[in-house]
Image (tube, rainbow, N blue to C red; front, side):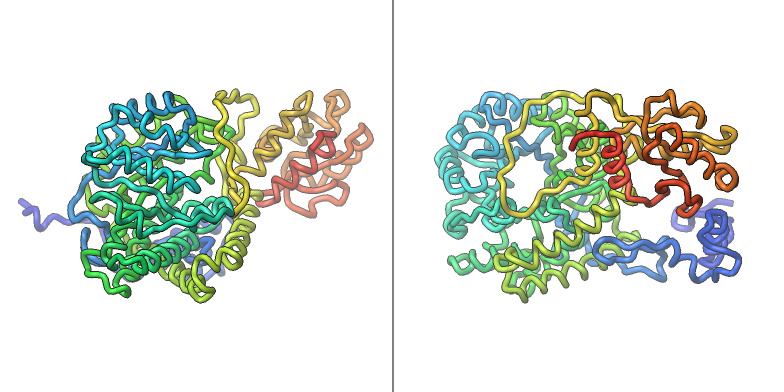
Length: 597
């Protein structure tokens, strides 16, 4: 039988699956895992599998048309949930440069532009290139082809003057930015700066924006996705008020803003965040009286600094690839991939090449940019976008009720970000939010690449957190000890009985820079260790854990852990189990082993 293309249906010939059938199969798996029993109703299966984000957004295990929010609008049309471009196309590959030596930065900038980068993000001032060297760094750059985004912090006015002097009488490529962001600077450094945003905007050539709303500062302080979005909205509204008060029309003021967001390895949340950001900003612009075609949001997505690790930094390549993919799929106009060695210091030519090639491969070989809004129509993404937008709008209105972003920086904003970071930090410590190469599968024998130190971060403002910071501090503490701190894993019974828990314990201790040796209880005295951990099955523990703990103490053990459920034996010191506070375990173990703080 011949089937016409318009009659061809996917899964033709297969019976239609029902939600209850899926629940039945899922319940079987949950029973095997001990998370459900025969009495568990099928309608509770999805609730057992559901999770909640740091914004209180419920993530269901299954989304179908019956749950779904349909796609909002069309690509390139208000409210721009589906992107600001009506047709598919690549995004702007923007590379960040901050090396304080102008000659080194110039060479790096030219190399990037010759090898696929389409715009330059240039950090100026104490945190990067001297403002006086702007012309030297950009010598040889075709400014009519390559947009330049400046980031000068407190030196923004001086950097703008240098830029206007450099480009006087020259054509300048559209898409550049002066980087004026006084509220972002205050949030990041605690330093206030007076800038005439409207005056800067009037001096900008056509296609160049004066203002950046850098929301990554709130992400870097430990904030959630909705908190980052809400702070971005409130900051953008504050700048709109200032620009229009300075004489710009609403349309012209909107055209002066570019928003910068963090992209993380949680690809779906990143996709939804960028889609939600555009929808929210379109609503703000609508309320301000902007025409539909003026409501789009210019977005610059940057791979998250907070998610980057100093330990096992090569895993950062996987994190940034996921983040860049999500940024592209989410519809970002410009994307910056941080080099994988960013936590170690200034990147070298190799790591910059890897960073730019990550994007080039996504655009040119993986063809990610060939589809407009590829996530559109996914019931999961559409629901997540909607829920995230609602949570962000609630936070934005709370900031506005507090008097706007400037007033909220003195109270509600740091307090809420701190509370979210405390929750995330606890989950990281318990390895519920695992960090590969740090809290999971650490390599104690790794040799880290050596990099030139980056300019020191300015003190003050919101804290700047790293998700891996607590584990990496333990690793640094252990590495500073004259010898590698070691715990003895006392295995009981046959190999099959103790292998799983011995591996679990070894991985947990290694996350704190502590090595392990394995052997029978009788081997402890000759191991040189002073801390031991029992490893076996529950059945063997019932018979042998108590006597084994006594024998280990008699042989000189100052603490005896047990890898297993709490309450297994009254004669051990404490327990290691899935979800325990691994940071606290390793910290106290280093104390027991005499490792200095």
